[in-house]
Image (tube, rainbow, N blue to C red; front, side, top):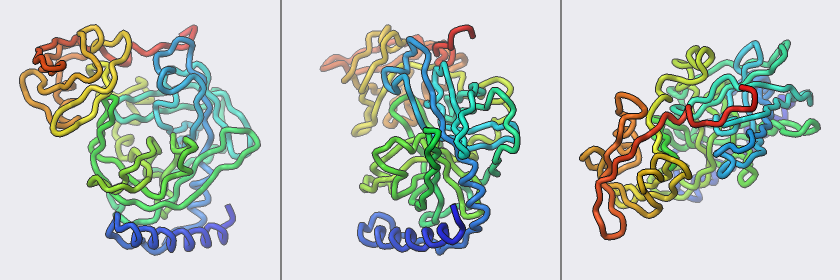
Length: 351
């Protein structure tokens, strides 16, 4: 992207952002004036690639993610190592990296990390002069700060798309699918809302450093039950301590933890089961959609964070979990025998 165009885009979008925040009253923070390095931002946008994935036949994740998936990633290593969001490459049979000079590079999965949600892939053949971007940190980011979001093209003739967004909050995030991080980044306006391009999108600070990887489109970016469409990004700070471990073993030690096979939500201080996965430990234990979890091992849980962390605090991933459950009007104690989720994922043929 030409530098003068990037500067004009910054000024225009910051004015729009300030206007939006003032009109909605959703965030009481003033937009930070542009102080970015256009050359660094241009290099950062060049590091963003498209990612296309075909999941292996019979993969359980096809039911929720589909067999054909598309998103983005960011080059973080001189060998072409690409950081993306993990669910894109979950149970992948075929992975393709689409570069900004319209080349398609066959790739392999390097790591899938349950604990952070990150995925790592790299080209099968050497990628010379790979456009590596430096890793930044969320620690210095403040609400109201202008950031750059970029998505890669997933077609050979397409171009990467760059837009400005604004940090509106930093807070813990608990997903319905047995996922929690103690710190996530929430931005608005959303990255190309409605097109699914938030998956693996790169989030960059004004110095052109990667600070987050796109995970979700959300309706409450500002938090506090205030409606504001935006995105949740997983901060790269979570990657730095485990990057070497991921490259060596394919996952972090925190990912080897109990998995129940539930989708849940916290409602009025109780855990409501939304979905029970087929052939999961939860299904085997007789749990059903609509059940309410009141306690884990006798200790009351009132939030997804408390629920997950209590379950994960096992000596081994297979250590039984005792749940106090309300099924209809009947109060039950249900013993679930969890599994290591990583061991249940389907591998591509020949691996």
